[in-house]
Figure (cartoon, helix red, strand yellow):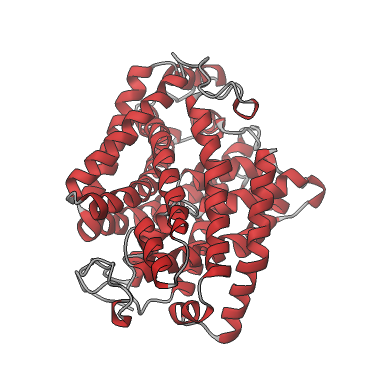
Length: 473
């Protein structure tokens, strides 16, 4: 369904229950615009960087199968719940939760559920921009031919040298954050929507080109077997929990992002169908990234479970040894930049939307304020990689012992704030919102709704709670 309304009454206005909401609100121009934006948020470094290496660490095909199951029982139900909250409230995540609490006569403290997500997205953006800067740096490194013919020691030294240089890291961090702010400052239609309608198709084209290149290595069949032939003897309990946690993280859940994007979604668009399509596209990108990466790894006799260094050390070594390696290495890092950029845009949006509503700032000022604050916090992450590498700000607590600023932000968001936020979303929507209101908002068939509702109430909270507790202990 396509709607080309630039501003319209906020969702729910027709019912007379939206008096607290803004009288006019921009909407996505079409269902596909929302799908591309939500997919752009979901598709990020987690797909192109993290998914391949955690798959390699956890044995391949069996891990992928469990991951797909986790997407179905955790990812899709929570995504639908978050989009539902955003559209029904019709404002920023925190304001939408306040409106729903008022409308359904629930305790106002529930609005801080969304506050957890907005805080998480802000903290993630601060260090995500630093990693995005690494990707920007490597576009130039690969394009210049600097990696060609180099040994593993030299390539490792290039990456280590980058991390050890705070000045260079600051330049790339600043450039990446500026690109992110440039898009968000232009608003929904002129910024977010225009960016994703260009970047997402380009990302898919680049990914397919890289998969085509990987097919020429002679090891594509080995990569297919590794990814899609389950060997459950290699799957551990920890691997199952990693799959569950990544299924949650990869869809940008618990960050307030899907609430923010859902607030721009027109009433006639199916939340269920769009959420499932976004999940399928996100998973497809992760699997295609594996098919692009693992043939190169196997062709060069490298280790698929190389950990976080897979992208910035192991793969550059593969590109260094292969025909046209500089060209396809450059394309790969451009792909990585696009993936990081679309996600960073979505991470900045919830806070900017809230500042516009609650502080009366215009779009430009709210973007500058939020973006500069995240940029400043990111400097702490940069310094923790070199000058402050021995500084653990919360090291007096056993759980945070030895964690630098970068490690601390990663741990707090991925292991505490995101699963806690997702768990509370499932509980709030599944146990506190009126069932009839959910049925009206989702407009699903009776059986489909009953399945989603049952999973959200009984299965999803248990699964997320297990991950949450496991990460803490």
